[in-house]
Image 1: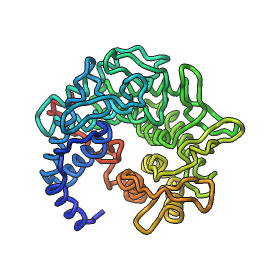
Image 2: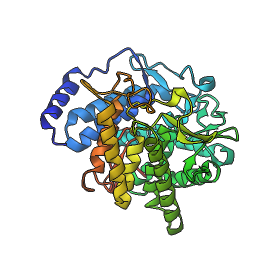
Image 3: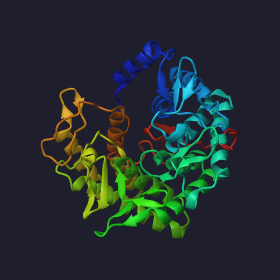
Image 4: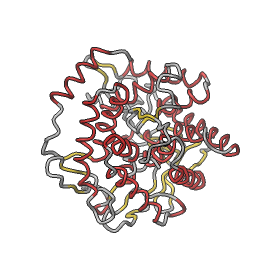
Length: 400
């Protein structure tokens, strides 16, 4: 974005003040996607060694979380002591699919940059465990025991708890310059099961991806699940002819449904979750789901669909979001989430989430940029929108 001065200021802060010797607990997943992903991307974009050094240092601190009987990491780690444990709210001490399944991209880069294979080995083992397991109807449940290696509940979701696991399969394949055939096969098989069991059409003709609870469908989609339009479009680009068109259509339909969740609200911003039951479609029916916390997933799908189809409506829809953010979320100190998207005078929650800068604004910026700004041929975005380079070299052993 040519913000040179700001970059120098931030770099100085990372050099001098970014202290990793803290005795505090952190989410393995969030540290990986936000901090390590951000540091790696900045290193690749600038070549400044300090970012590489900090990323590797932080990566080392996460390794003790993998010391479990299965090698599936626990979700929370004390960065000082290396002690790790599972989230208190996670079913029976389990690890979460979206968390341990969203390490692959960053950890391969950590091995590549450090020459230390341990990072790549940790995430390769996660794949091994997942491939070995029986999947109900070919679907991946969200909770897995790091001790026994068994699924803990049969809850399947493409939204929270599951989402980025699927994204990292197709992106691992793209990042490896399409050599990681295991990732591609896992992605294709998972998407086939999702199409078969979870993709539904509402009475009003909207395509959505339901959640699955032990065989019973919950007809709702979370805002988080709206990234899937972009993901499916990205995968469709590289599918066989028959699948390509079907998946491109599916991606466009899901993205349209997510757009409807915005268009049907008074603020033109979408709710945290929306449902397809009791006569309402693409709208939140519960008070607790009416909020918007500056989430990026819908504009993320607009960006991918724009880049892959160049249909003007995606830029049009993105511009509607820009106007709605300006009108309802801009406050004196930045931008704030709102508590209810269905009122024209919403209350602010007084929080600007870090993903607003990392993702929401970046995807909007890229939606209106030329295609060669962080070209999809050369870069893969981690789930926090930090760009990592596609590995165009053949000599690399880590990726094989």
